[in-house]
Length: 482
Image (tube, helix red, strand yellow):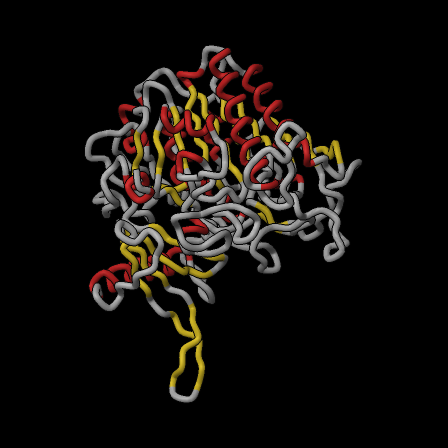
């Protein structure tokens, strides 16, 4: 089967949904009653890789990496082939998964001094007043655990244990943020249990293995109650590390070794679920926080772009979902979906609700997951930001880029937004600009862009419905004894 045919198999090509717009605060009503009426609330596991590209696993076309467990997961579940994160970098992307909101909505699109992500001893963090997916599920009686990379603030009031998780085990930010020549103020890279540093610098060669053991232990302990596991892997973010069993064994150097160990980890989790007899009552999602970086060995093919960009290679990620008996096996869906949809979807399936006292950008996508006839994306539009700047809008099959370019105006060179339009159903690599052929589409997507600017802002302008981040004027380093 040709690669293009492979990626289009399953749901019909993207179309604009007739349902609720993304900027409304209401949940989609589609499928809500049927989900809420079920008494068998599922367990939830979200496996969230770091910098894993669209083309880095077998079921999304990789020929370099052996990923039999994730590939089996796809055969038993569904592949979402137009699944987006809200940023091409770590912190903003993670804030959306936790809150169901765009990063600018919760003021997590940059750090305190306007850099792309949070850094050690940062003054900024996810506001404790935000309601996370863990808090929503905890209210419904779920046990909750975060195991892995957090990256939403390293001060105590911002840690997972203060954001709805019963327990935490992991590295609080990126694995390249320890002591190095250009960051002498950084503490040794810490490994935390709950709020205490238990190892510094952390041994990264065993981190995927230890994360896996931690998750399996949590599942065993909570087998008789509903649980939520958030597993944000540290790998394959650079510097890549893997245990002895995987080091040097892949066809793609250290990056491939990491990917194959993450696949092993996924298999161990499924093995535990089956052994405990809870496999059929557990919804598992496997995805990534953004696209692969341009030079470390990852692949975003057939997409263009890479980590940090608003080309699809930076923000469109592989996504596989499996829930035996609920999600049709061996299916795929090309409808527009996103990590912002996970929180409202889980809330509904757990018998609860997403927060109603604030705007939540995500929607319940269970109808798509369940393969319901005629189910469409609940999003009229999806907005692609890089830090503070709105750089693209996607609506149905269309994607309008709004990059800033230098153009000649007489004898002067000025910066100007230059619109470029792509039909992603026919041009997945974003190579053929149709803006001059489709002026009506450009005009419609520009109206949507202006709607987003008014709501959550753009470079140089605040939105009417932005909320504040958390702040600590006197942050301290995460070190042993503190």
